[in-house]
Image (cartoon, rainbow, N blue to C red; front, side, top):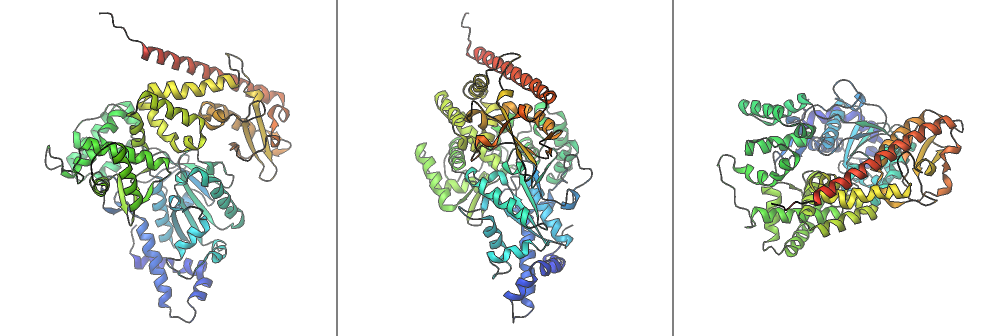
Length: 580
């Protein structure tokens, strides 16, 4: 349901008065009720703006998300999700993969909460947190938009009112160095304000998901029904809709597996309408994207491509954009001011020895390719995955020596790894040889050497430790090596995901020191002393020790097998027969 600002203001009057009545009374003392009406109108306008978004399909035009929104489903929850209460009345993390529509879902829920008229919803993009700014200050600043005299000191009363619900979007976009402080602040709110519900969106494996203050709900992937509904929403012509649905149905398994998110289905539609060809794999799917986005403005003129403002070739523009993505991601930037954007572009042009005006290049990025969108006085990527994909393209163009240096840095430096782990997933598919040779093989080798892995034997269990928290009755499990944390092991736990998954189930099913374990996480070892942990074999019985030992043996054997397969792949790739 879509309502006007005036209707929304009426719906929000009661919750606003309940949450901010005392504040309004103080701030507007001696003034007319019109000021309260003005506050309501401003709040309602801000909420209606939440559902106005820019999409890669429409480019620079903001549209109401209801025009293309397909109902989001959540794993293990039956029925359509229309309100937060359909999921839970507790604080939660909504987990979704790249392009799965987390932000759109958050915006949709914000709007639905508003028109319900019981609580005041506040939507905040965590990427907008400024350096050293607390979340409390940032939220207070948003409230000041409709109650100017509101200040940080007023926050506690409002948060305690039970009439506020916070939607914090994009936890995975918070720079690594800010994560710990932000989690502490949010967890503090959960403890102090029982009536405050907090909904956070994030990609998988974000640190907030380890918090016992939040339950994690996973967004479901698109099936054929959702794919068809999105095609119906985006494509006007009936014949084109039928062709696109048939194209999706006839696509390869690899492409079908790719089309599980709104973003990928949208890009498929754009690709197919431009080329009238079905890509057979992911590389094909992406390689034409830049060209498709440039030419889409002139679909009615076959063979014609609009000249770029910068006057450079499409290839050079793409190279500059890839370099732009490389620099901005390394700087933890997905939102840039005009000046920052120009400075980065000038650096890219100079490094690549391309002659062009940086202002014109920025125009091409934002108005022709539309991968960088103007947002007021700032520029933002249409989606973080765009920045990550073209970052990976930048790496792909580099020499083998440069790639080796990149992968080595990712292994050795956790800060770098945390910024590029999604990029590494793109490279895993598109730079398979170098990924295996300089990244995955090295990590597997570290595991093998660190835990002395041979078939049917290893020291993983001997280096498995547990910490029991008396405060929240949670269990944290870590891998340790000879009394010191091994950076490669701790920073790249993907090899042992299966191990921890099994241990999670085992630990949750037993009593440890008569404490029922209700939570589990792989420890973030920053600031954690080794003395806080105990040998897991000392706190559980022999039966469970044997169960875990079997799992560690299986995991170790799988690591050895994968290592052997990678060695064979590299050897085969290096082999060439020149006999005629």
